[in-house]
Length: 250
Image (cartoon, rainbow, N blue to C red; front, top):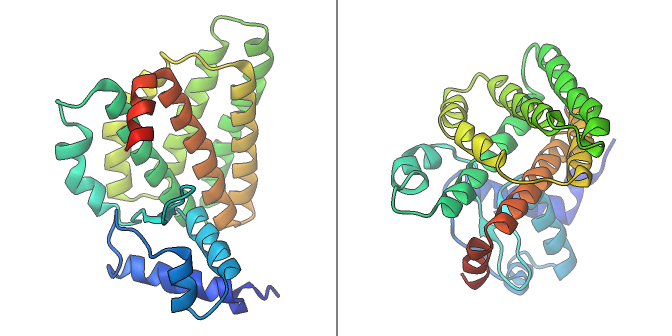
């Protein structure tokens, strides 16, 4: 039996998670510094760092070097209310729109992965997820050989993977967000050139994600979703260097 729930870092993570979910800590706000948290919880800095890593893996905070941890709400109602005024604002640039869409996809997919282990009939959805993952893997030799349609096949399988993961939860909010926003992102992603090595790494991450979902390793599954989609977001920003400069100066 794991002793993780008895560790100081686990207790701290559970406490902060409760503050986030009950609204004590608002989306977009910042936690106190690690020094202040250590004083508040009467502990050293190490359990604080470990707790923040756990919260990051669960998709509840954003960690940036040199900055305090920022709250990333798990309440999808926040996204439903802000879609028309922020994400689809006609005044924002194309690159900013893509960045917003990436953030939505990351939150939606993380929530779907977190809930997956509680689904009834999840084996049926796992079969589809594995099929999409294997299709990505099968397309890799042709991608390395620079076959014209191979990347298209990979991206179609990747889109099907995310669609299956989200729709499996039978959550109207998740489904509505995905159906209305993510196709725009999928279309835009096809204009970005990915190297064979980048697609190879993504294929491996999706296979690892299938294994984590199959084994009920929820935190690992969420972490894999975040790593994979955060890397994709970096690629989007590389494609639009002016947007990366704005983010860096923010």
